[in-house]
Length: 282
Image 1 (cartoon, one colour):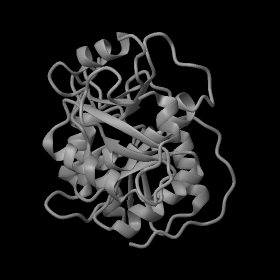
Image 2 (cartoon, rainbow, N blue to C red):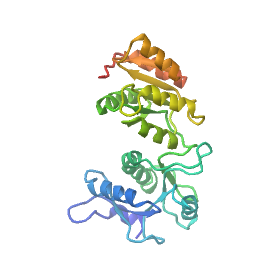
Image 3 (spheres, one colour):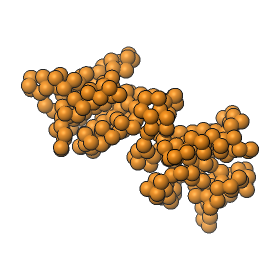
Image 4 (cartoon, helix red, strand yellow):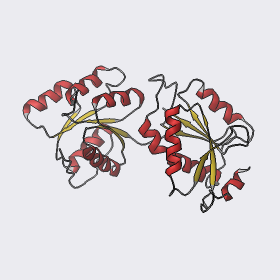
């Protein structure tokens, strides 16, 4: 079945959405289950994606390749060299010059899956942009060292409300973000992902923000990443502890939006814009 035919193919009885078959290569069981759940419950997405029953030539429309699996890069390269190659969506990255090998982050995979598949369909399969190069299209879930993207921040706070408020404020500044609820999760994310900023709360279970900051600054691979402590603690003793831990900036909640902007853009070396006031709950 051709891609043109799939465009016109409805998603089953009562479902008129165009349907596209996704073949997976090397994806672990946990991520296969996540993939199935996301696709099954995406009833309001404009396109319908189903898992391909076979992975031979012409038997799928989009190839999804786990780059962190053994042989993943070779599989992706082979698929892109095949005649009439289908687009290849690369999940995760491997052979990063800085860290060697990245693991897949479950939250990033889940959040970016549909967006990436839709972009492949709209920009390539549906002809809204130039045709793909001879070696096939290559989209990425989880990013690559040389992939163009905007700045990204890691938000470390055990309060989902604080993470959400801060993420919204940063998004308005053009800064993407990913949130985690503990220092252990933060260190795992920092070991496998690249961030331009790290926001750290002080009061967290097991390892507090000062300890996390010290751990980041002691690691040669992470020490250059700016760490901004964002906390309700404002005593001179707490400010001194932050400085001794090695934080690059110390902000006290509720923080003025202009102060947040100034701090963010100073570390990103971008001009700050004027703003109002952001109240981040302690």
